[in-house]
Image (cartoon, rainbow, N blue to C red; front, side, top):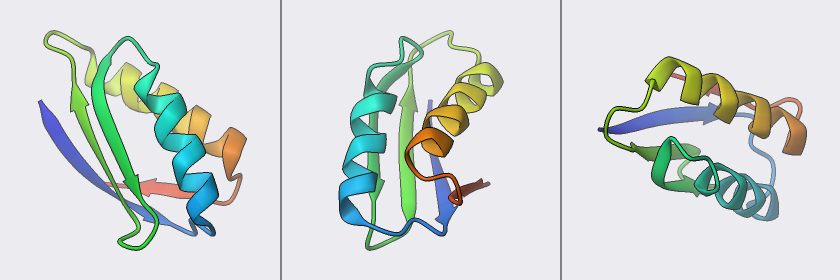
Length: 73
């Protein structure tokens, strides 16, 4: 299942790359892209993944890299 989320207060391209690398390592995620220019994140969840739990893990990773960044539906 593919979902796109808006990001608020993503401040640099380097942080976006760090987020993308970390999110792609999650077992619930098949692939993810984080676009600094578009302020968007696209996540392709693995089949049968718990989307709510995966999104909570993604938000936690994002806060580690960029504490002020918010994920919006």
